[in-house]
Image (cartoon, rainbow, N blue to C red; front, top):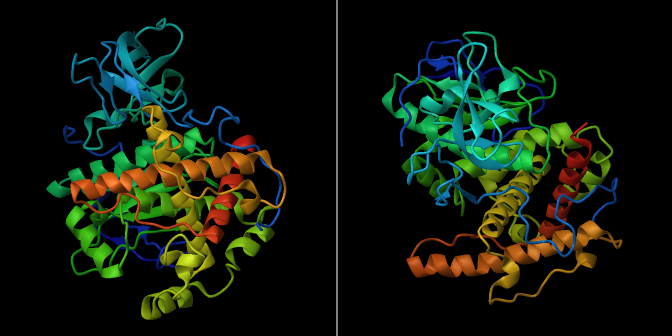
Length: 434
């Protein structure tokens, strides 16, 4: 249940270098282990195309979140079966669709094939991910063309990214793995919807891909540190324990701490290496976020010993973002994914900040861009919709006596950094991260 810490190049990670997974039997390869039954003035840079819908069509989600079964009942992103009629369901990340499935024979290795009900079985055939019946309970589909060699697990685009899982002979690990994979599927579906490069470092792109190591510390051993280094994202599986995570959130004075937030933050470190470092964005990035070459361990130590600067709220999306330019980027990246996915979900169900009965002072394109860029108009509409929607959601939270849905305030400098992320993602989507 442990990892052996080893030095890693480039400290693009949270807190300290992430450990390299050990070869101990306590860590197993995902999809190949025995499985348990599933539980029920911004600097100028190259001009990209915008990931937002065209002006006048703002209410369309980038990644669809509302689905229905063939029986007409609503089904949801995590469902593998319609609870009303028992029809099997599967998610195709390329089509952004959760589809009712019907049998379509067998593949070359006698693995069942499926097709989306309502379309000819000869058009698009699928396998269900091998982790469907594992504790991960994955409902994603694998195109039949992706047949693996006989005896090898057929893993979907999301499960291929997980390199190491915790020892499933420890009872609580199955539930923790399930929670982490559920959050990871939501994040990865958004990354795919934004047309960002998503490849496994293990099986698809050894040089530039990413993998996840889900680790737990050995009793009496060094802690597992959630972080990123050169495409390897390490997650301490105890972050899946709500009580433990809440204790950490309180101890660190954080307004928000979730599994999904961790995944999006560490993905931000990965995409900085993939999309910014050494590219035409890099100089403009330093102008916006700061020089990442300053001493990273010393910056984090100073942050934890002295706390953030008193004016951090006027310049950063979070107090942790003030610790170092890398963390500013990762926090801003995660924040952007939060707002895009939440708005996608709202818009998928017919909700939109443009339609709520609440008005704030709205951001203008000229506040995020020094030129008349169409994508600046799209971006400020995104931000304005977000602010108005979350204002209402915060009031709903207060009506239930729970913490605010969105416990943040966005300053103008933070919004301009979000716009930088918006532009980098748009350019990556246009070029597929080449």
